[in-house]
Length: 170
Image 1 (cartoon, helix red, strand yellow):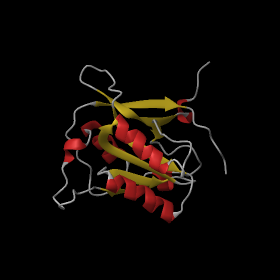
Image 2: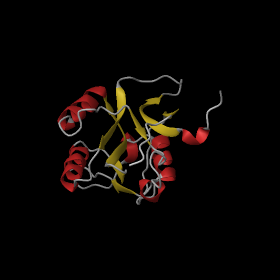
Image 3: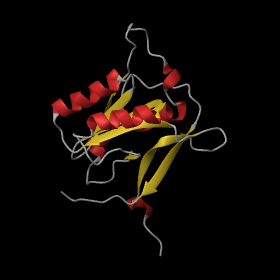
């Protein structure tokens, strides 16, 4: 039986592949999501990204926000960051996050309008893209509308998946 491809969505996986096409399970990208539009929660989450020197884009979904960082971190730091936010969303950690606005009717009207936080170090030096994955930055720059654009110097292939999302009409 053939399935209509229009029903599929795309997700970005929090791991990257090295030059040999192998996944390094000790390095991750930090994703998070909330099912709330509460600005205080958004600020708590953005503070975590800032405190850990992670660049991040964030965008509205029908029920809340998605947070996607192109900054590669250790598995230990990834687990620690999730532990700090576990009370906000016990369903995390996010190993994959949807990057296509097709789960709800008319979601495209707001899904792709993102904001970005590019972190400077404690001495307020200009941004250094040495910790960002180039392929992830290029994808996020292409899909989402935000300024300034992300830059990355780490070479590695991003991992995407396609799946049928749980669709809700309301």
